[in-house]
Image (cartoon, rainbow, N blue to C red; front, side, top):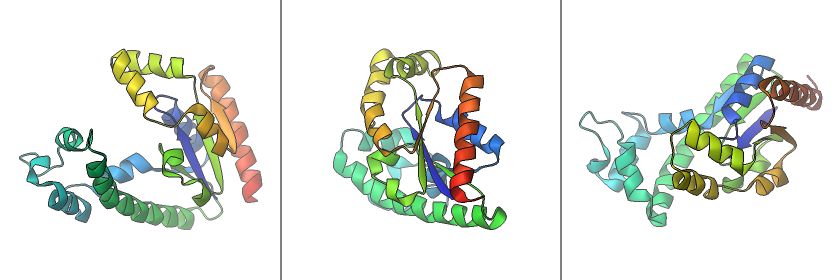
Length: 201
């Protein structure tokens, strides 16, 4: 069973992913795959350099993320060109990861930790969607106190993503991280048991 785990920035998705792993799920992390897609020596990085030039590399030949970020930040066309390179690579790597997980644990729950599921319109690819949710106020507080962002930086990152309402619209299950860790853990355990029931495991 292939399950998407999504949520807004600072909603607590990584915490919930760890809890699902503790329950027995296999976690595939989209962010890690996105890094692998443009790792040094990869075809993905070669394609990005071909598109944007060698100024996006450090002296060691590693992708200079801040330099690339400056190019694409205010240029939607450039961002789309980057996505056209990276997204197919991530799709290929994720398909390989799903196949390996299914072979290792037949009939198990595979959870794809994917931040921008709603924005990318990918709900249909999954058997179920779990949304991790916290209020905008709490997420802003976490971004400023735990990640050191200014209030404006935090607000712009939250505003750049789908809203809680948009994520709820695609959710089969919603896990709140507004309560204690133990309460969240109980909620996650309950969701996992329901996923197992749905999968027939």
